[in-house]
Image (cartoon, rainbow, N blue to C red; front, top):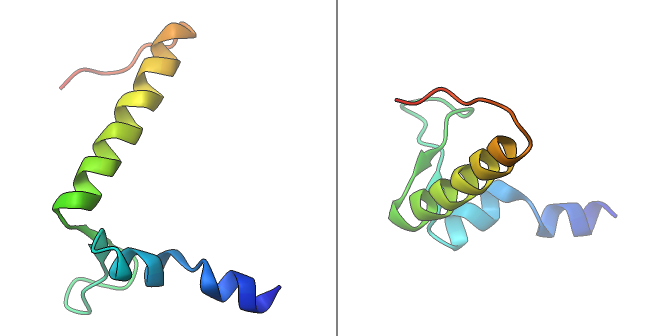
Length: 62
């Protein structure tokens, strides 16, 4: 199980797929999204926002 968890580590996969990084200058807990990762993040946020609105939740608009 530990080997499987290590293989699926999001920090490792994010770097391998060029989605995001965790620069030491910023801090290990703050991801910096690369262009491809930013697209994925936006699609996921849009989907989440759509589902919440369909369920009657109000989301703030910026």
